[in-house]
Structure formats: structure tokens, C-alpha cells
Amino acid sequence: MNWLKEQSLEDQEIQNNLLATCKIPKHIGIIMDGNGRWALERGLSRTEGHKQGIESVRDIVKASAQLKIGYLTLYAFSIENWNRPLTEVGILMKLLEHYLKSEIDEIDENNIRLYSIGKLSSLPKKVQRLLFEAVERTAKNTGLTLTLALSYSGRWDIVRAVQMLVHDVRRSKLAPEDITEETFSSYLQTNILPDPDLIIRTSGEMRLSNFLLWESAYSEIYISNKYWPEFRRTDLYEAIIDYSRRERRFGRTSEQVVSQSKTIEFQSEKSLNTR
Ligand code: FPP
Image (cartoon, rainbow, N blue to C red; front, side, top):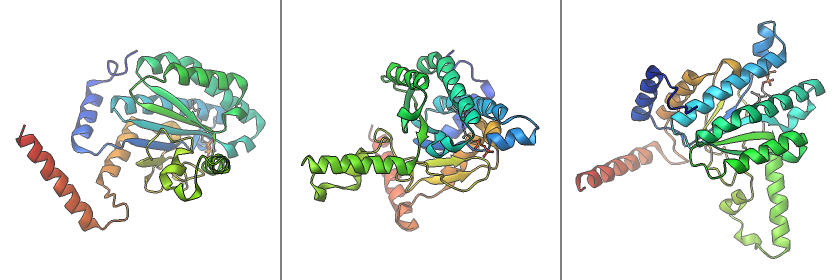
């Protein structure tokens, strides 16, 4: 199903309005949190919470693709999550397997490029295979890059990058004095992604929980009080509106930011007038 065709007129109008009036982040990262609490508060099992969480994944992926957001990274399973009870881990892996099997056709049809980061060798073989097939099948797609962070942790990726870097220094492929922030970033698994502009966390918790630690140096953080299973596209729109109102200074003063954006505005008006 083509996602642009199934969109309601009302939602299209809301999105058009967002596109016309807001700065749309190029890369959004989401820490999906609160599946368990959502379920327990309703007298349901945690599994039901995770199942409902997948409905939110579906809606947010679609809305992001429709809004032509470049990159969406979902923190689906951390390295620390392996410490959960075995039965819950098993259920999460089954749900992931089901998601990959049932969504891949639609993901591909809608020009989504699937990518994944994390210690993938720890995942069950079946999930690894489905993941590699999906990544390979969608590698040439040019729409939204949907990254699933699975068995991922920011510190793990940083340590892994350091190990590879030291290896290259030892083999004289790299001189220590040539190591810059850019060189270091290129060793991270996220090297094909721009740094996230906006990181959303659901369920009111205010932590990064080992998500994109290096990459989030200048990310704007948005905390939603909703649990992940109830976080849907209208909540994403609210987060984008909030992000759009923020002034991103990257260490500069507010005056510098304002004067630079005026120069850019002036230059783009000038180029429009000379066309
Ligand atoms: C956090 O809720 C959620 C997770 C650890 C798993 C997220 C997984 C999904 C939404 C389903 C599978 C994902 C994909 C991409 C298909 P929690 O269990 O930590 O909630 P709690 O803090 O209330 O206990």
C-alpha cells in the first residue's frame, strides 16, 4: 500500500501546514519507553504493551515518510535490555521477527531504506537473517532511512570504534595526530547518518539511556509524557512544532544566530529575485 494514498485529507492538511511553517528535523531519534507501564496500568500483560508499541512504530514510520523526514532512528532494544527476564526478551525477539516479516514489503514499496545499528551478532539467528535481508533489499531506496537500534548502546559503539581505530593506527593506516572528530565519527556504526537534530523520549523519563551518546552532542531533546503505545503522529507533530521554536546556537550567541539567519534569508530572496 502506498502510504501517500492512504493518508486522510485532514492529516495531509496538517502536514502541509507543518511543512510550510516549521523547520523539519533531518534526523529524529526516538527512545520508545513505557510499553510495560502502559500495559500494567490497564491490567494487561507487558506483551500487550509491546504489541501496542508496534502500532505506534507503524504510525510514526508512516508519518515520518509522508513528511519526507530524512532519517528516523528507533531505540528498540538496548544491550542492557538483555538483562530483562528471559521470557520478555524472547517475546520482544518474536515481535521483532514478526515486524520484519510482515512489514518488509510495505517498507520497500514506500521507498524506505532499512538500516540497523547495534551488536547484531547477539540477536537470534532468524532475526539476524531477516534483518540483513531487509537491509540489503532496501539499500538502494532513496526515501526515509529507518534505523533500528537493536542490542545497541552508545558506549558499546564508542568502544568498538576505539578498538578499530587503534587497530588502524597500529597498522599505520592512520596517524594519531590525524584523528579528528570527523575521523572518529566515521568509525561509529552511525557513520551513514547525520547527527540527530531531535531526540524524543516518551513516558516522561529524562535520560538518554545510552542512546546515540556521541551523536547527540547538539541534539534538541523533547520529552513526551505519553507512554510509547499511545504516542502517535499528532504527538510527533507536537514535538516537531516544539523543536521548530527552539533556537539552535551550537555554542554561538543568540545575536550571531539571528544575524546569520537574516543573511541567509537575504541571500535566498536575492537569488529568487534574480531568477
Ligand atoms: C520500552 O518499554 C520498550 C522497549 C524496551 C522495547 C521497544 C520495542 C517495541 C516497541 C516493539 C518492537 C520494536 C520494533 C521496532 C518492531 P518498557 O518495556 O521499557 O516499558 P516500561 O519502562 O514501562 O517497563
